[in-house]
View 1 (spheres, helix red, strand yellow):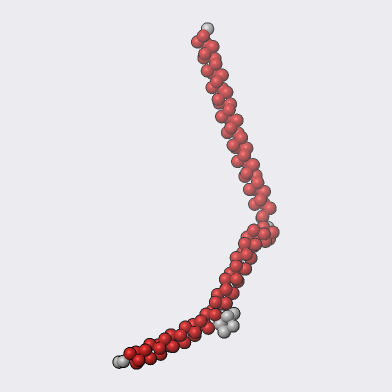
View 2 (cartoon, rainbow, N blue to C red):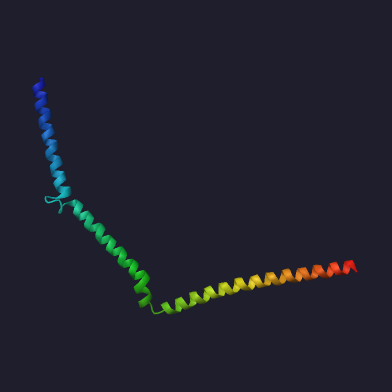
Length: 115
């Protein structure tokens, strides 16, 4: 093979590659760059975002409005929070009472030792 034949063969292969690339580009972008696979993927992503927003709205808004026991659940969660606060306050008061009693006992012992 001569150099010219090799160059012709390379040019032919290059043209084939360019033609294949153009076909892939048209398939990806579309003829008007708005009707190919890329636009289909973007439409799917957009519809997925809409579905996610609707699911989020249902979970946080509509679910609480349509659930017949939503007010009971909110009331119980509020009471649970109040009970936890009362328990914490009670344990703090018990601890303070025990410390006070211990200091009183130490004071009595010290007074008894001094006399």
